[in-house]
Image 1 (cartoon, rainbow, N blue to C red):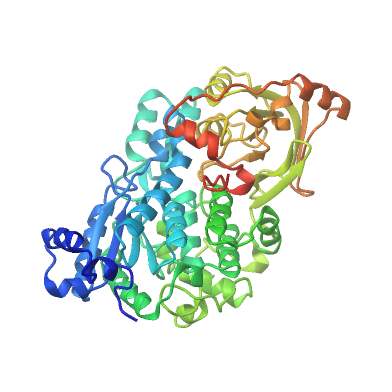
Image 2 (image 1 turned 45 degrees about the vertical axis):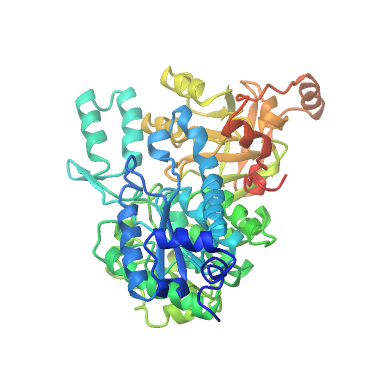
Length: 559
C-alpha cells in the first residue's frame, strides 16, 4: 500500500494546488509530497508537571519520524490538571477535557488528512481522550505516555500528590503544625511526570499498554528516565511498521484486549476512573462492554499489586522490579490474559512478552503470587440496589472491610461536604453522601479527593464511608462508592436520601441500599423537583446537555 494513504489526497491530487502550496510554505520539498504524514498530537502545556515535558517528547519523536523517511507534524491540544483543579470549580472541566481532547485530535487528523497519529499524553484524561480519537479515526496510531513523576521526600518518607491532600486532614486534626504542612506541600512533587501511584494516570497508561495501544515498557518508564528518550526512536519505527502493515486501532482494541486491560487494573488495584474510560473506549470501538463485564473480570482477578493509594509502592518501583511487561508476563503465565491479542508492535501480546524475564518474588514485595494475593478478587466492584439501580462503582482493597452500615450525613455539593468534615459534623459510623455532582449535576462529575483525603487525614478512614454520584481520584482510598447512577440531577434515588437515613453498602453481595420503606421512597420521589442546570451557556452547559450517564461512560456523542 502507499504509505500516504490519506495525505495523498492533498499532496498528489492536481486539483488541490492551494493545499500543496500551503505545504510548500511549511517547508515541504518535492520528495516530501510522497511521504506519509504522521500527526504527533501533544497535550503538553507549562502549567502542570504531568504535561510540562510532553512537547519536548513530541519534538524528539518528530525528529526520529523524519529520520525514518516519514514527515512528522506536531500539533497541540488541551489539558486540565486534576491535581491543580481538585477541590476547586475547575475540577468540573476535568472529565469534559477527555472528550475535548478526543474531538480535537479527531478534528486535526481528519481535517488535515494525516496518515497516522501518535498521541503524546500525560495527565489522567489525556490517555482515554487520545485512545477514543484513535478509534474514531481508525488509522495507524500509537499512544506515548510521558511517564510518572519521581517521589518526593520528607523526613525519610516518600511523598506523592495524595500526601499533600492528606496533610490537610492531618493539620485539621492537629497532628501536624502549619510549618510541617507547608514542607509536605513543597516536597510532594519534585518535577516532571504524572502522579506516581496507581492513580488514574498510571492505571490508564499501564492498562492501555496491556490492551496493546502503547509500546512495551511505555507505562512504567519514569518521566525523567533515560529510557524515555530511546522510546521516542522506537515509536518512530513502530508507526512506520503499522503503516506498512495497515494495522489500525480497531484491529488491536477488541473485547479480549479490553478484558486484558481491565484484568491489569484489578490486579494492580487501579483507579475507579478506569470504568468510565473503558466504557467510553469500548463505545468508540463499537464493542459491547458493560458494567457486568467489569464485575465478571474483577471476580476472577486477584489483587496482587501492593501499590498506592491503598498499598505501599509507586510506579517508579514497578520500573525498579522490571516494568509493566514483567507483571503482564506473570498474569499471562497464570492464565489471566489473552496472549493472542494484537499490539502496536505488529506482534501479539504473547510474542511481546516471550523474551521478558520472569518475575522474581523472593527479593521484592510489590507483586504477590496469586496464591498469596492481597485479595482473591479485584478491587473494582460494581454495586446495585435501590440506591443505584443502574450501578455504582466501589474501590475495595479489602483493608476497609467488605460491609458498612451507617447513618447518612447528606451534602448537596463538595464545598458543603468539605466544610462539614472540617467542622466535625462527620463522626465514626457515618455514611457521607455528596450528591448533585454527577455528569449533569456537577456538571462534569468532579472528583472527590479532597473530602476523602480529609476523612483519611482525620483518622476516620476505616470508620466512615462515602458515596457520591461524582467520581473519585485514583488517589482516593477508604470505603468509598462513586458513579452512583441514576445521578441526583435526573432524580436518582441518591437525591432522596435524608440525613439520618440508614445506608447499607455490601461488597460481598455487591449491593447498596437505602433502608427505608418503598412507600416512603415513592413519597419522596413524588415530592422531588429537578434543580436547574448550574450553567446556561458554554462548554459545561453543552456537556450537561449531551453527556451520557456514568454507567454509559459519560460519552458525549451518544444522544
